[in-house]
Amino acid sequence: MNKKTLLLATVLMLPFTAVLADPVEDGPHGHSPKRLEKALALTPDQTTKVEAIFKEEHEKFRALHEESHNRIKEVLTPDQVAKWEEIIKQHKEKRHHHKE
Picture 1 (cartoon, rainbow, N blue to C red):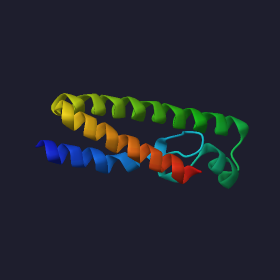
Picture 2 (picture 1 turned 30 degrees about the vertical axis):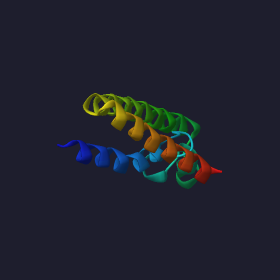
Picture 3 (picture 1 turned 120 degrees about the vertical axis):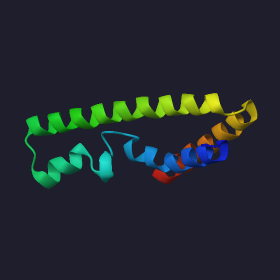
Picture 4 (picture 1 turned 135 degrees about the horizontal axis):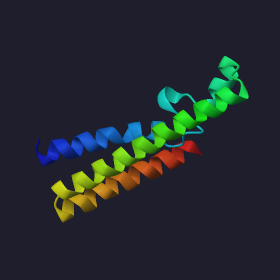
């Protein structure tokens, strides 16, 4: 895979990171334990277990995401890393602004 393809794949992957940005607020497919608790009339025990599942999934995703970022940085030149980090920064700012 060439550098441009790898960079494009990474940039395209960024929006999906927002889905799991906060396991309490939003989980996979836009669900959250609180939404499921209400929609499915979960018991307190079920809610606790669902929250634990969401948290575990979130932690695994973050670890995978961090590993991917580190591996990508190894492939890029220092100039490309700087540009890539700027793209990520802009994406985070846009996502933060969108949440407000």
